[in-house]
Image (tube, rainbow, N blue to C red; front, side, top):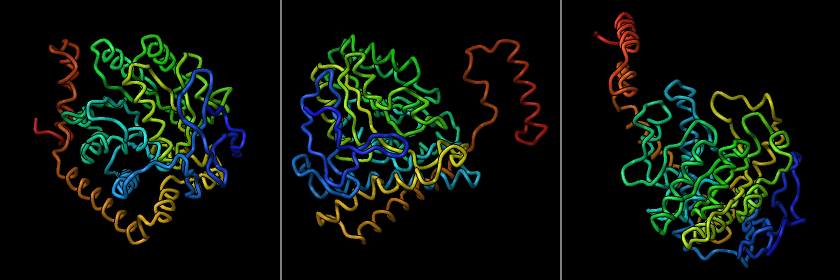
Length: 388
């Protein structure tokens, strides 16, 4: 068992990551209490640790790569739509594709997933149609419920609030002897919320089959890690609750999948929760209402562009002879076409019914709200929004 690896470098933001020119060789099993392992399998140069390299088929490797490209294509198109006034406020995921894809790739259909609001790449894998997610981000209430037969929770805008319900599902699984698990993700900023600590404690006490994924992307909106916590290692927080914890290069798809596979296996076997800290970076905006140039330097982003999860995976696939540049271009085009098709479906959907705003609050509206509704409908009519 390896503890924190002293050979890992430290960035100019004080974030220890695996960035050596040769991959780090670390045994990943078993995960023991009191130790925090640091895992990297595929480094930013596309070099893989031969001792930890997974044995995936070429088709599986292309499937993984395509999932990341699809997430990025969706991200770019949504940002464009928002800037055109055709989409609501949106939280980009640029640079976190490996983290997102890797945390759900090992999940079974009957496992559960509780996403945060930057997890659309995972939601696509879990079975959310793109146009459904577009409907969600455009503010339609029917966009939030998950598709039929998809065991996902809708994400919550309230930071960290979705983590406790995820643990509740896990506790229910234990009670019902359901041999499945729950993966829930949240950001480094959400780690400061009391709900997350409560969730870790409940999961540990009741040995709930929950995998916590803390996406350490460097920023809680405009708050850097050094102002968010006294320790940059969020995995240490799991140890405090007797939850086995591991620190993973979140831009390494193989490492994310490996860590999640082991954690979900532990969970399904009745061994309780695990905390995975995924060290990644938010290369784009916090949301489309944010201007990151106000609080961070471009040089910091450029440094992480060299650790791009797609770039390193492309280098790896090229070295293995799995894909060529023409294949990369074909996959990118196919994913962009898929997003455009979803966009057209979204545009063709019925617009929101402005009169429904009061319909889902009470079974019987109080008199005060009835009066507000009458006034509201009158104003809509005066503005020509309705015929009433």
